[in-house]
Image (tube, helix red, strand yellow):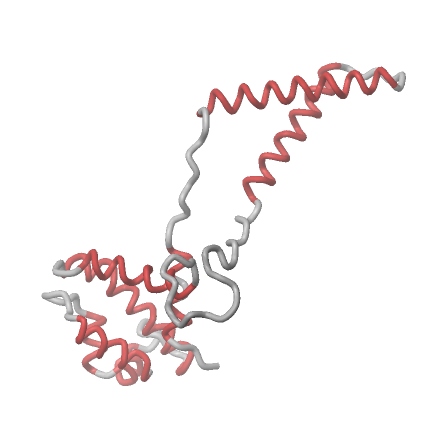
Amino acid sequence: MSTSIDDLLGSAEEEQPAQERPARGGRVGGVLKTLLVAGALTAVVVAGLRAVGLQLSLWVVVAGVLALLAVRRVTAALAPPPPPRSGAGIPAGEEDGHYHWAARDALRAAINGWERPLDWSAGNPERFAERILPRLGELADERLRQRHGVTRESDPARARALLGDRLSTFLDTPPRRTPSPRDLVAIVAELEKI
């Protein structure tokens, strides 16, 4: 099975933290809204039961309504996010040949997953060693595992032979300076050769 670096970069999208929606009204507002909805639903259920000639304890009805509201809230919290609207802002028909930067796609997410940390660590070797070097090491291990059935941890000697001295040394020792873009291009090219 052949996997490119681009396929491996797709995991950066998963690493980004989910942005939480700000709560409207706070916790007290949410509790009051829930109690009002529970009271209204309880009144409707009790009225409906009495209309058909049934009687049920008020506390049983309240407990049942609160249980249903709790189940509704839990299922809403566990539901997957809605799919992004396709074609938002992009005219239908033939493409104009330009990249639409406002469009949300996997390529842009993968680029941002690397662009931001690289930009943030520019000129700071400690940040580079902390943020970027482990990612590159994971990519190297994944390529070694997929193509040769080893990782740097499982068989260090064979992994070093497969990686080459330059790439292996780069991944094992934190750099004294942040690598230039040209150096990073050479490193990625070596990773792709694995």
